Image (cartoon, rainbow, N blue to C red; front, side, top):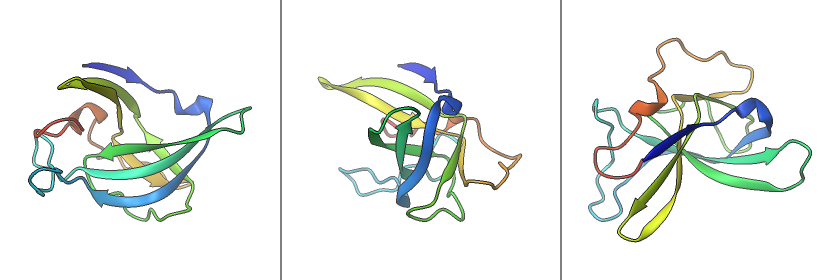
Length: 124
């Protein structure tokens, strides 16, 4: 899989449109964890490019529960990476970050690097 760093400074407003929830394995119903045993949370974020009216929603996986994030809030996404994947003939792009914080709140110093949010049970 190819991991591509994303420069969030080139994006416009980032807004939470789906609040944080644990990522669940669709087949088993189990909550997914990363290699270190941290529960992986997923947040739906609306992304709008600067100078463009078009917005997209991406699901961003993080290796711990983002605190203080609610629907409609502007957020900061730390260490965002895009990961191209292909499984059983399906392909796509997933997104991970080391953390997501409310806009204006400082990033915590104990953030797990974005590369560590990968689920041990499949794509992140």
